[in-house]
Length: 304
Image 1 (cartoon, rainbow, N blue to C red):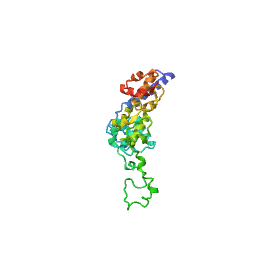
Image 2 (image 1 turned 45 degrees about the vertical axis):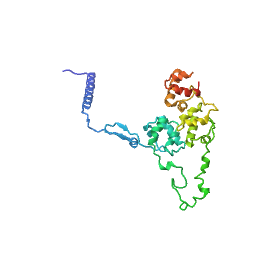
Image 3 (image 1 turned 90 degrees about the vertical axis):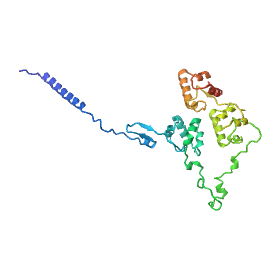
């Protein structure tokens, strides 16, 4: 009869334990998997509120809203409406600065929106009644007859604060041929030009500020609702332009210029990073993002 010594017995015990563990592992992994069990999928309540529909296969379809109020819309909805994230953030910053959209066309005051964006969004704008008029002491839009008006309605010391003298807001139009300096005229002077009212005058000044000044009267045609017949009233007397240094300006500063924008600013930043400083306009042409017409408009503003 064979006898095992102590070391042999230990080896047999270890081998037996290993075989038992291996058998348990094989048994667990060979069990059939229940593929019919439903997997719990968490519901994104924010997506549901933003018109996101989740189907049975957990795929997500985003449905753009059919209307929006610019006074309450959030940045996520603006992106759904087709704006770029930086445009949506600029839109919200403009509103947070105190702006109130009273008419659909007021969205044109947001610098980051292109004309194509404005044309696309205008039919979707729906402004709530509380934003459509300036708040006054009396209900919005209500007309009072002399016999039914509140007691203090005819008190000029009260009502004059809510109904200013309109003559001070209607500058007399020029009747004789004259020209004004396009780079120094304020909104009051601009409104004296036939065909130019408060909104167009405001847009002209804002476009001038964004450009850094006009170098040609024809640039006025870039402003919405400016007609070629209005150009005869203007001339460029002061040609001090705010220059654009392509090598030192930040991405945000470049993208805010009307002739550059987000995509072109990105191309400028990438080329500057890869090839070093710009030395002439040909390097700008090499980015492939600028047409000859745009370069001609942009050239007077450039410095290196």
